[in-house]
Image 1 (cartoon, rainbow, N blue to C red):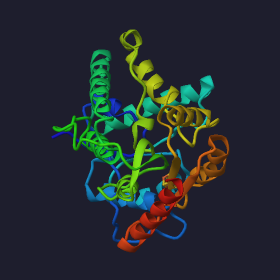
Image 2 (cartoon, helix red, strand yellow):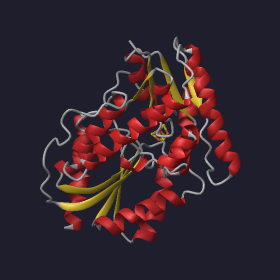
Image 3 (cartoon, rainbow, N blue to C red):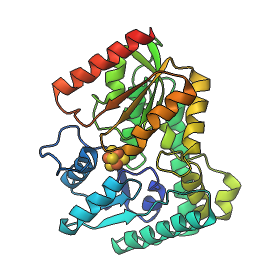
Length: 326
Ligand code: SF4
């Protein structure tokens, strides 16, 4: 059986892990966790680590995109019995040095995977792995418009968790467009059917695009066949590092351009911005996005989203927001 490596960061290429002969598994934390985080620690970060450990992986990859994840590593990883790799993803992305740093971090990750029992991938093997993931991602994305946002999100979750396997059924349930159109943007999602996308739909919203951290927004760009042939490693760096728009990147222009494109294309009546209480970067976006988009924005803090009462409160706020927009 392949050794399983758990991660949650969109800048970690699963193709790279798979090409080393290990199984990449990107997970979302469970909604319910049995112990509260230490004061000052993000409940998402805490929950991610607990969920990952409960699955008894062979290793975990964390990344430095957020201070809370760094804190988690500093405070916890010495005590863990399994190997943990901290991937340094540079916040700046327009300089040659930043790109070089990302490339060298990928190489360092490769050495970590080899120590774990993986193999050093040949150019051919890496190229085939990258092409396979690209093909499956395209197939998955073709099913986006036929599914509701929450169903498509479940397909993506299953695809990433299983190490790139396409789910048997790509269309879970046909959508009939109804409800007030909304765009959702923000940080990571929790696992399960009751996440913010599902709650928004149940409240009567029609999600016309999903820009949360675990959505299409953070999928790598499409492959360029001739570049892949020339250097699969360089192409891997390109599709991840050069193209994924994210809130931690400096400057964050690509995120705003992505959102502008989505708004122009799908014309939502309002936006829902979901984040955890420690996500300063997302909270700082609310007024900026409201200002340039001219759209009403409902900000939802997911940190308390574990009990029925908390869920009901979120649903009530969403219903009130939708009523205002109707
Ligand atoms: S939810 Fe936000 S604050 Fe928490 S670890 Fe993720 S990015 Fe950081």
